Length: 136
Image (cartoon, rainbow, N blue to C red):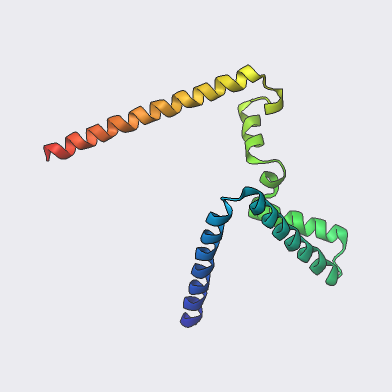
């Protein structure tokens, strides 16, 4: 039993390293990356679809089972609506398409100001850390 767990961990680690290497290389070529990813997604769902057909799963049963699985693992709402859309609705923001260009530019400027403020705070904290280290 212990040997099986150790072997599984080695296999998982191998594929994690392989994934990282491939992802880093493909990220330099976004169109190729998107194409390969799209092919993988389509083939995966084709396999799911044909497996459901092979076990004679009815359409209605597939719908309920799929919805149940997504609800149980917590991705039903986020997959179909999206987290950003939910958050913007909770905050009361308008849809991006409804915002005026000036509003978007104002928000971008505010974000840049916040980033600058955070950078200044980080510098101050570094100086405080250095002062504390110097007093020791």
